[in-house]
Amino acid sequence: MAFLFFNFRSMGLSEALANVGELKGVVANTLKQNGFTDVVNTQSEVAGNKNGVRVSILHLHNVDRQFWQVFMAGGDSAATKQTLDDVVNKVEHLAFL
Image (cartoon, rainbow, N blue to C red):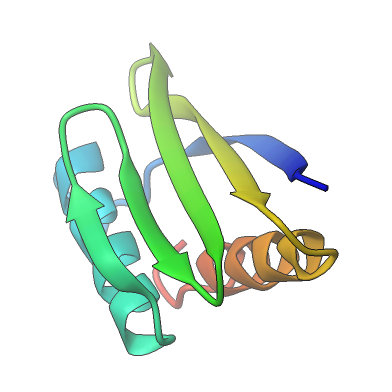
């Protein structure tokens, strides 16, 4: 059985970062540090794989320094949701946010 989960939040960019591109770089490094493989940081997403789960994070500009951060995870096990929750928690607690 396949599983697909998502989470989202609206947020403002910290003054510690010049733009969303810098944030995406930090998020990509966070994924790598937490055991994700095949991590990509493209114009459309930051994504990576871990234990058969693919996590993708979109950053959608809203206005000024405000944007939506959309987290999605797909996988073949019930661990898919826990993997997504772990990533959301790590990203939400980055020191500069």
